[in-house]
Image 1: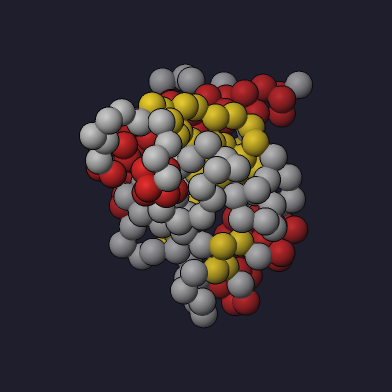
Image 2: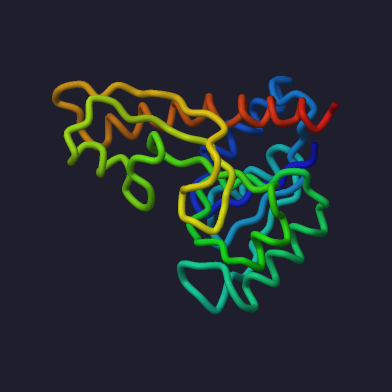
Length: 193
C-alpha cells in the first residue's frame, strides 16, 4: 500500500508513521512521499532522513483551504505517486471537492478529539473548557463535512484535575503517535487481500 503524507507543521505524526515503517509495524504500507503547504515545515526534513521524497507544493491562492490552482498542484503531485492512501498528518487546510474527488475513499485524517465531539480547531482547548473528564484522538475518513467522515478508530485519554493545555496536548499527541500507525497497518491488510 503506497502512502502519501500531507502536513503543515513539524511532522510528529509523520515521524511516528515513518518510525513504525522502519520498525516493520506498518504491515504492507510504505510511505511514497511527503508534501507540505509550508515551505519551511519540519515535516519536509523527514524525507531525507527516511529516504522519502519530500517537497513543498504551493497552495496559493488561498490561506486556509485547498482550492483553485493550489488544489490542482496538490492533485498533480499526489497523483504522480499513485497512492492507495493519503494521510493528513497535521495538514491545516480544508479540502475541497476537486481533491476529495480525485482521491475518493482514500483520504484519512487524524483529529485530536473523540469525534464527533470537538471538531475543528483547538479541539484540546475545547475539551478542557467544556470540563470533560476524557478526550483523545480519532482517525477517520475525510469527507466534504469537516471532521465528520466515517470513524476508523479512536484512543481515549483521561483529563485529570489540574490538567493544563500543554500537559493534555502531550498526552493526546502520544496517543496519536500510537493510533495512526496502527490504523494504517490495519488498512494495509485490507489492501493486501
